[in-house]
Image 1 (tube, chains in turn green, cyan):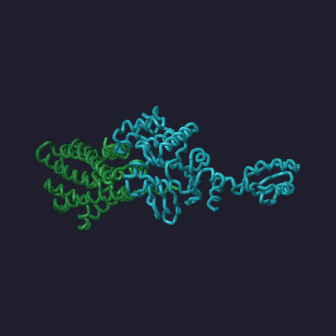
Image 2 (cartoon, helix red, strand yellow):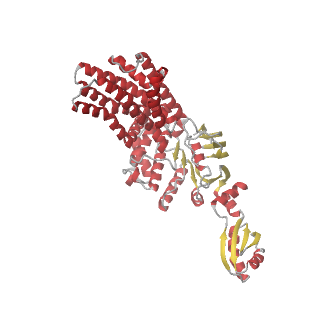
Image 3 (cartoon, each protein chain N blue to C red):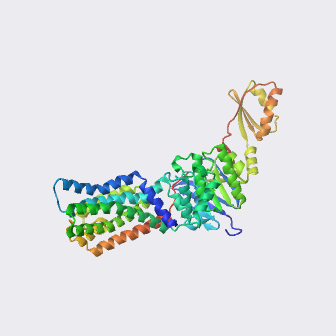
Length: 241
Length: 307
């Protein structure tokens, strides 16, 4: 097995072994439950607001936050990161393995429920498939940006979960509605921009253009990856004795 | 490793955290062989090992392994192995999976064979397929050692490797480290237990309060330790009479009559210990109690630093 694959596998195993991951997998499946309840209740509303509000605004950032901060932050907290760092592996490869696992797991937990939810609500027809597909692609690119950003955050602060929650709830949630300018520093708004352009649906705010959205998401990924690599290069253990 | 370049070299190295100094202006160089890093808890041993393993950057000075700066160069891990004391190992892996993972991360040509060899070296074959979570502390130490040995490093750093081991495991580990040193490896292990260092190390570095208090071969350091002034308090049937008799003993250089006790300062521990009973007997004095008042490792270290 190559060093990179070994890193990926051990990160994945560590993530799958955490109780948090199980809880967050349940959160990932929540939209399906909501869709089932709606159908059982006889309703058949438009899928778009559910995919937008519930998945992209709520489930996606929370799943990415928990997985991203766990991918490296938790390994630093419990000290198991040391035996990975004491290896002749370029630090960017470690950053790539960790961010890839965080992004891949986020996608695995959020996207399938999203497709199922979209189809449950909209039925299996071209319009519904197009809508679910558009939101899923948007959640994929947005999820990658969230996961990479939160993985980097886990290397910058040991309170990454709190800081990340603050960013999602306050910056993206509250301030975006008050201060127009925060849109350009919001992964959520960029993700919704992509979703709006793919589905042609109203996403509640004036959407960012697809180009601006993709530039923002790419900038988050590149910056997050660079920060993770640099922090790993300068990594130091905490005071021991 | 280039010939003539010390395996490990510290040049006026200090490391501080805020205004706490953990390591203070330490310089030494080591080649192949077993060296003990001796000092009480909190002396800065782990900080020194972390500096050598590139897990900490020095605040001042230079740390080199095999001639290269230890910090910020992952390629040193091709020939450096560290067995950390506290850092956790993933409990959900079996011993074999953990060692194999380390072999894979090292990018070894035949990681399977290297894994088997390392597990055989630490004699953990029987337990290798159990999760590490079920291991005793001694077994965890050994699986950590196997993982640090899997790439056969020329420089091996061990932080308190004997902690939690039973006497048999301890002897086995000592044999193992001796054998590896005989193969030309540079081995530096830390310990706060004098006897461990005495039995294993050819050379000793004594650290106390972040400073290098003494260095050299064990015998010379042992002599420093036994020759230092020792303090005793004695309770006897006649303290004043005993004081008069002891004054003639060449090792005794200080006597003080305290309330119901006699405080003695002696230079030569063994000489004094042999002499005290016959002296008391010939003076017709009964000894009730003899206590060494400062024979803690702490006082030994602080004495070495003051010298």
